[in-house]
Each structure stands twice: as structure tokens, then as C-alpha cells.
Amino acid sequence: MYAQYFGLSERPFSLAPDPRYLYLSDVHREALAHLLYGIGEGGSFVVLTGEVGTGKTTVCRALLEQLPVDVDVAMIFNPRLTSVEMVSLVCDELQIPYPAGTTSLKVLVDALSRALLDAHARGRRTVLIIDEAQNLSSRVLEEIRLLTNLETTKEKLLQVILIGQPELADHLARPNLRQLAQRVTARYHLRPFTEAETHRYVQHRMEIAGQRQPIFTRLSVRTAHRLSRGIPRLLNTICDRALLGAYATGQTRVKEQIVRRAAKEVMGRRSLRRPWILGAATAAVVVVLGGTLALLASRGLSSMGAWPPFLTWSLRAQTPTPGSAVAATAVEPPTGEPTLALILGDPSITADRASAFATLYRLWQLDAPTGPADLGCEFGRRAGLRCLSRTGTWTVLRRLNLPAVLELTTPDGAKHYVVVSELDGDRATLRVGERRLTLPTAEIERFWDGPFVMVWKAPLTGPLPLQPGIRSRDVVWLREKLAAIDGTSSAADGALYDDELKKRVATFQQSESLTPDGIAGEETLVRLTAAPPGGSTPSLTGARP
Image (cartoon, rainbow, N blue to C red):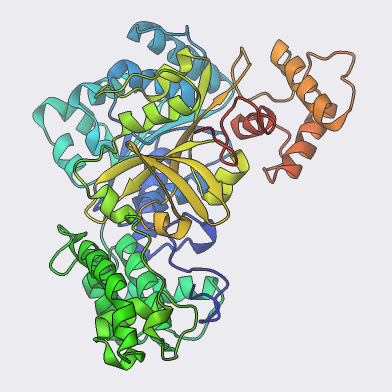
């Protein structure tokens, strides 16, 4: 809405994890250095803590980009798991095969141990990264500690990075976890931005979006820093809303008063613990306003000068022409559709991980049970589906074209899980509990910074990825799928993944905007197995109701 007005190519304060906007402050660089040091020293555990929204995910993403090519990484985004579920998920992330449906911890640990020894023999290292680690139970933490006992005479076969909120440090300080605490080789606690870092951060994001001139005054940035307490996620949300406010009132600079008003809309009037009060009040005002606008217009109140400042902003924000007097009759009537903020704040609506996965499986026409039990990926695995967990953007979701569970975080730090079932331009359809609503993707981005999980149908029997040198029936299947796409006949030795097949895979990847490395990993296989329009597989461009 405001991008063109301010000379921007896009919204600079979107919460989507676009790597172009990566900003590492001094504290983030120091945290990254601690993580790299801990891994380089070959220790068992590295711990990173920080308040909600301080940039732990940003540091983790930067770490993944700087890890050597000989490191295999398993990422766990939701650690509310039992010991069996945790080890099986680690195996899934590392593409380690194990008997389907097994509930034996010994069987899973044996499979993991063999794979780690094999990786070590090939000169590779393995790192397990667990986000939201403050949610790990003591029993699962102890099981993870035991996994780090897998070692050779010289080094550990598995290194673990625990990332979480400050409660994680308190958890590790408990006497029953002292053995684990003694194995931590590096710790770091992320602090919020200083005021100087906030100024650099705001200007950095504005410049990446194409505007080098200072749109935010120094006093407005200082105010944004104070109200957000230097927390990057809150800072993004406040600055985004402030740009909208400046646009709506026809101002070319974002000033202190606009930032204050934006913060009140985002955070509530009193504190972060009551984030939805102002949104609910505003919605009520708009509903009442919609019923009286015609009457007021008929009495001659057609100029915005007749309205209080707050309502002036609200009304102007709904019009496409900034900086001009707006007739009250030009305001669109309210649709009655509740905002995502109100939906997530409604205690009567269930938006936990278990209900989201149940909804996702129903889109696959699977009779998923409802209840407190978290189905997770295990239920889908028994039905022949694989999980794909990633952190990405709407572009990534469009490319993969499958419904996904999104992890949303509200300003009070609460986690909510919804299913995105359709994408149409800049609007997305979400399933939240029993509700179904279509919203602008920009509104969803206020609460989503990238984590998603989707399931896909993989008619493969062996481990992934498929890569040069492998000989298996899965390679035969890969050749047949590519032949159906490019019309090229299979080679004489169809079971061998040779250089010719690598080139064909790279060509397909390039056509799908994937990294053309010639290796058939999960994202490549998801696109290969994509069903044609009208098929039985759900998709974001035509998901079944």
C-alpha cells in the first residue's frame, strides 16, 4: 500500500525471513562467533538464549550459511516430543532409514549410531539444532545427552545446539541436568538492540528496500527503540505500521507521534500482555462507524477535518489516495471478517499444533483423530507420507505448492499453529481450528517469520537425497518421472545415478527455481511428485475443501 508512495520496491519491515535483509548487529555477530567456536571445538552442547523476538532465528540462519560443506544438519523446530519421537525425528531429518512404525528407542538409537559412524568414516560431521529448546522435557534432554555419548576415541559423533528463551538456562541449571550442563562448551545470551543499533537496523532495511533518504526522523527511531525495547520483531511491526500511518495521513516523514500511535495499535495501550485490546476496540468503532457514515454524510460532514485524529487515520488508511481530504462516503463498508489478531486471541478457538496437523491430514483425505495428542509426522509416515520442515517465504510455499502448517508468534510470545490451504496472489486462505478465513499475506506476516511443515507423497523406498553414484530402484523411478516431463528416454543402466542424470535433474531444478545442484533432495522430489491439476493431491492453487 505505501511502498510506491515512499519510493520503496517492497515493504522493508516484513517478518518474512528474506536473506537480503539479514542484519547482524555486534551482539548477533558475537553470538554467531560463540556458536561457530563451540562447533569447532568439537564439544557436545552449545546453548543460545534470548528473549522472544531478539533474533535467535536470524543467528541460526546465519550459522547454517557459514557451516562447512562437510557438516550434516538436523533441524528440530518443535521439541514438544517424547524420547522416541525425538530420536525418530532426528533420523528423519538426516534421512536415516529405520523400521516403519517402530516404537523401540533401542532400534532408533542403533540406526542413528550406525549412520553417524558411517558419516564419520566419510569425513562428515553431524550437528543437531533444536529451536524452542526451553520446551524440552528433562527426560528428552537426558536422552539427547546420551546421544552425545556416541563417539570415537577422538571426537563426538553428534554435536547439539540448543536455542531457546531465557527459561532454557534455568532449566539446564537444575541438579538433575548437571551432567548435561557440564558438557556445554559455549553459551551466549542475546540482548536486544541498543539505540545506536536500532538506528542502523532501520536504515539498513530501508536501503535494501530501495530508499536511501531518511524517512524516519531520529526522534521517531528513538521512540520506536524505546517502545519496542530494542526487540527486532516488535521493531519491525511498529515501523511497518508507522509507515502505513504516515502514508495514510499524507506525510513524507515518519515522526514521533506516528510511531507512538503505531505502537499503541501493535502492542496495546498499556503493555505487551494486552496486545489485542486496541485492535478489538478499533474493530468495534469501525462497525459502528459503518452504520452511521451515510447519515453523517447526508448532514454535510464530508471533510476529514470534522473527524477526531484517530478516526481520521483509520479512515484514510482505507483509501488509495494519500495526502488529500477524504470524503466519509468513500470509506468501504466493513466486511465483518475478523482480523487474524482477534482470531488468535480468541480463547474459544483451538490453534495448537495437534489440531493444525489434524486439519492438514484431512486435506490429504486421511481420517486424522482429533484431541490433545500431537499427530506430528508419525501419523503421516504410517500413511506413506513424508514431512518437509523448512523456514521460508511465500515464494517458497508457492514453489512447493502444498498445504502447510505455519507457526505464528503473537507479540506476547505465544505460539499458534494454522494451516495455509490456498494461495491466490497476495491473499492466503488459513484454517484456524474450525475457522476458515482468507487474508492478505501481509497481515499474516505480522505473526509468521518463516517456519512451516508440509507433508508429501514419496513413492520411494530408500534414503534421501538421491545423488550421483547411487544405484537403486528409486533412481529408476527418478528417470521415469523426468522422462515424462522432458520426453528423454532412460539410459541403458537406468538404476545408476550417472552424470547424464545429474544434468537432467539440474535442468529440472532450474526450471522450478530450485538450486541446480543436480542432487534430488526433498524439495526437488516434492516438485517431481506434484500432482496434475484436478488430481487427488491437495495443492495451494487448488486445495480440496
